[in-house]
Length: 503
Image (tube, rainbow, N blue to C red):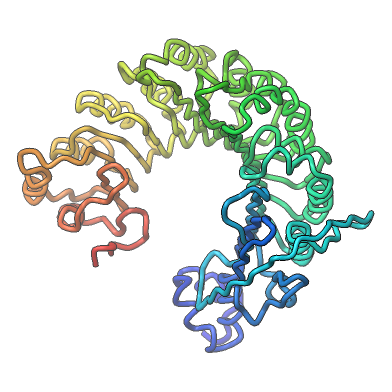
């Protein structure tokens, strides 16, 4: 055993829970190395830039104060382990203020507060941002922090709370221009979240990431400047579209999200019409209100068809937005979804399908399942609760998918007939998530639990099951009864074990 190669020991360590590895950090240098990697692989930095603000600091021996009292990782032993970093930027007009730098898993952390009450003038140099005021020093500290993260692979920048006035400031633009070169050859995953106008400032320096594999773009509407956002739609095309042209060759995952707006929504049709080809695209995640963001959806359809041969993971959450009931806003969505399947080869290689189920009937859902039946491994259908007869149709369609191992459905009624159908028609299913309504009429869920005790589903390969009332997990009695009736179960709610918060 002692002569086993280190790679094998590291592989064995992957099966040890993170919490246990951290508890063993003092055993030997190997466990210390593993524990430090776990603790520092992800960090978050929150900047709230009001003068006279309260700064929240991480109290750790691995950090030192930087003028004026900002925290910078000083030890490469720590900095080299950070693989993911999240930065939240907030304008000076924010109500709460502070700076937080913290790992994703918190162990024995103590927070202290410091007051900064002096307002001074920001100074700029050609080499970077140099400032003695609060906001400038925060940005400067972020740049110093990022320069030491030599192994960073995933970066998230949330600038959704940055006001348009702040975006136009010279210091903010200089900050972005100084930030991107630090990550140019490192990043594999980049996630951006902000308002339309803010993207113009963030991407205005034309950053390039030659090895980027995953890109997430989240467009937020700022209700305080709706008019400005509305007029900046064209400007977004001038920044985001060229950026996509610079990273499209290697991109494997693309996520685009746009929040609903009840005032003056921005039409993103031209973004899809002019969008470049993605020869390596495997995952496409589109989440936006169809009736607001896609007045001309032909560009999105073309994107789907052009990438059909490589697409494996497809999410089309095109939920209509408005004051009417959702199905009253689907007049254009339903025929468009059907039209996307007119090409017999389109979307036939999908392995993971997450689609908005239109109202009225489930024909659209059934069509997409049947199109990719030979390759589908996971089906996710949310946003609408299905009647028992609709659930039966979906299960029948899923039974024709020989590789299906995961199913997520919203259902009106949880009864023993449903579990019987799932057992008989989907015996190879390994993961099941069911969301139902929170109702206790006629003893519910007592009737289901009592009926379940009379079943024993031998041969079912189900390993993990989740049953929720909306987002709330069902009671322990129901879950334990399921475990008694399904001998293959090893996990509840995707946790890898059968313990719950109720224990």
